[in-house]
Length: 489
Image 1 (tube, helix red, strand yellow):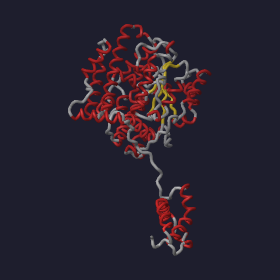
Image 2 (tube, one colour; image 1 turned 30 degrees about the vertical axis):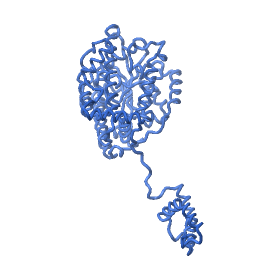
Image 3 (cartoon, one colour; image 1 turned 180 degrees about the vertical axis):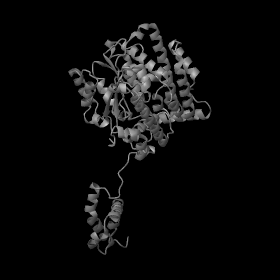
Image 4 (cartoon, rainbow, N blue to C red; image 1 turned 60 degrees about the vertical axis):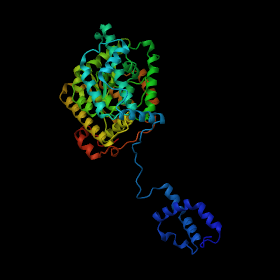
């Protein structure tokens, strides 16, 4: 029996409550001055302990409501990818094959071109302007992407799918030469740095019955062009939804960052991907050589294909105006206006200290499906360089053509958050467009059904990606000053 306890029952009680009491005494010793409880202490050790805990209880209760003065609020952290045991073992088997020099499937240009021809029975890919981008992409995937087995399959599927659909698209256009006569007039482009409100604004503008936006499913499988009577029932809609469901298995919770649905409007990078000149590839894979090559290219051939793609889609389902969107247009405004001289442009703005970690988080999340090796610091640096360079090019192109000033309209992310429908009304007034009651009603309904953070909260910080706010502010200082973006929203 313990000499300091009058009976064994005391010892048993201490044993039962030892863990709880130990925890409380740690808090006691760290947070409570001894003088506040000294009068309650007695000579008996057990009674002394109990008296101390009783006196401490008010402080413990208060500690539940109030953080310690020296405590640091919990910070969001990059989470490792969630994978089922089937995916983990599949990737391990692929790694074993790779180590034995038997990596499958092969990502080989000649083999992919041959398979696309066999799959379609077609052999005309159109102008060979796509070949350089295809070669650079494949080389970068093989040397730099650190693909796991799932990533290898994803990369090969994506390239093969683009080649197959390109063959079908070119074949349809050859059989329907009248498509070349389709007019694309005053298309409305939404652009700006990523994560600046472009997606919700794009979705709202697309609700106007007078507007036509390329929907995700019809960009994924464009041929034959969608028919009006099948616009909402085409079998390709369900097929693309299955494709998205599979992506969600590999990238859980991606909807928290960016909404995905077959009927939602798609970005232009998914169209220029058919020319193999697109930011779409780097969103899914670590391919720095391809990214560096792509940033320096003229995209004239990509915008020419972009225009032909719109002609193709509107040939059976035509409306007054195209509404389009992609942050990537920032870097290539000269090429955009060369193809669409009467384009209308809405540019959105947000403090880059929020933009850069948000877009880095998006790409980090997407890439988790394809690789087991990621360097968040390198990704943060790459995003900082990419978007500061793209923004500088965009502002330089705007300033070089003052005659186009009326073709631009600027909106802040803060204004979009505060009142998105008012922002839409301002856009219509600036470009002298008619905003009908029907369009407003559809926009209100869309807004009600697509609230921000509908799928959960997207957490990110600059520190996750090895960046500091002063570094980002230096890279974007002229932009921040020009558009008064000092407030970080």
